[in-house]
Length: 421
Length: 110
Image (cartoon, rainbow over all chains, first blue to last red):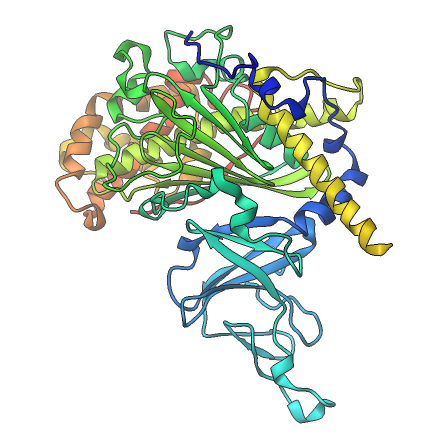
């Protein structure tokens, strides 16, 4: 097993000494009361990724995003001037959900010159302004100019569209993302537009699934078959090449011999036939541009960067020039919606399309194993058989995440308490 | 009934009606609805012809595939999907899927 250099302190966890090394409680993943605090402190305060710029392909494009944890839905629009804006998806008149398709409880997308409320016919421009009040002369002292939609703070970073539901965000999006994630500005995400999307409703706290993707310690035991037909070893060890924390955000970088360079006999026959698999299509599209922000630790034989962007976005960037984004949306203290998008450069040939299809198939195969642990973990944690759980150095990101969530909640409550005094 | 696949691939034709499926949710449902024996038979016939089938499809513009080539590529998508039960899991679902589901809700279509 390759051994990668660790910080002078000997471990990643001790390098970030504020984390401590003590066992941690997962009370934050089972408590309805703590979930209510997260709703206020995190989902109504933090910048949240609600989509990609590819979701708004032209002027007039819009989509809605339900943010259940904040008990709201937002409309995101691309206006005639190409500006991206977001609004609460609520009619100014009587509070009806303004834009929906077949059911108000489902998200929608489309193209429009204006939005018309289904209830009383009020109309709004893509900039949120009210343009028509039905039977306006029946109202008392109404001024259309003051009856626009409630705008939500919205900013775009590297093509990722974020909203912040706080009336006055504590930080700009760039300040919130910090230098480590911010360095990805300029990475050519926009060249990867061929998209495969997945969705699941899972019976666990949202953080439990994030935890499953922010450590690779589980890979040899849980994904024993991922290594191939002749090298299945559940006792194999895994070691991340680089871990880095920046504010509430974190990254793990993997390194290793690239899958497409492995001996043929160690791979599944269809991997070899289709030249693709869990690391993506082997025949990568080469990018002419620089690739800013990736491999922040400068590891040799870089494989994957797994950026965990607080609170609920994961972006995995692969050496074979594709990426994957996951979002985890809590719907209660022990349920969440999982969204996954795989992004490839557009296939130019049937062979390339099939290689992408096989990569997308492979992601689902192993993600089902990850998701298969969820209800069991949730049930186990909720049994409260133990007060706390040990985490090893390879699980530093789990430790950091739960600390960040706790710190974020405490900071918000401290501010709120200060403001109310 | 007229053939779904190009004449060169008549040996795959017996599987075409079941497995030429344009959408992953339909292919996934078919996988879960099939026995290992059925999938093994399909896999065994398809695997040795896959390279020729890809080359056949690549004679055309990907955005302008004739219907029979499109069917053939959809069949290859199904082949890629059943390779997991056959080569990896030895059962239709990934090992330890438990009660998990993961629905593909968007994909590029031919």
